[in-house]
Length: 158
Image (cartoon, rainbow, N blue to C red; front, side, top):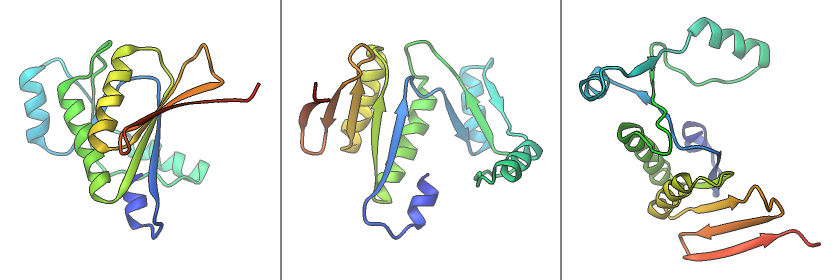
C-alpha cells in the first residue's frame, strides 16, 4: 500500500489497517536479517512466495500483486505476544509510511488486551487513530486519536 500511495498525488494519503491479531509475519530483505533471526531461533519458518502461483492469481483475478522474485517472508505466530523481529520490521514499515506522509489508522476487532495494547502503542508512536470495535457492542466504536489526544465513542442511533 505504501508503494502505491507514495506515487499518488492525493493530499490525504491513508492506510486503514483492519486486524484481529498481532503482526505475525514480515519480509526478510537480506541474508543478514535472516541469519540474525536464525541465530536466535534456529527453528524459524521462512516462506518464499511461488512466482507461478502469483502469476496465475494476477491473471485470473486481474490483480496487481507487488512482489520481488525470491523475497522471503518470516512467519512467527506467538500467542498473545509479538515476536521482536516482526515488531521491529512492522515499526520500520509504519515509520516509512509516516515519512512518505501516509497516515495509518487501525481498526481493531478483538477483545485481546495484548493486541489492543500493541495497536495503541503503535498508533501513539505514529500519531494515528485506533478504532476499537467491541464484538459484544458492534453498534459502538471507541476512537482514540493520538494526534489530538482525544477519545470518543461513536454509536448508532437507536
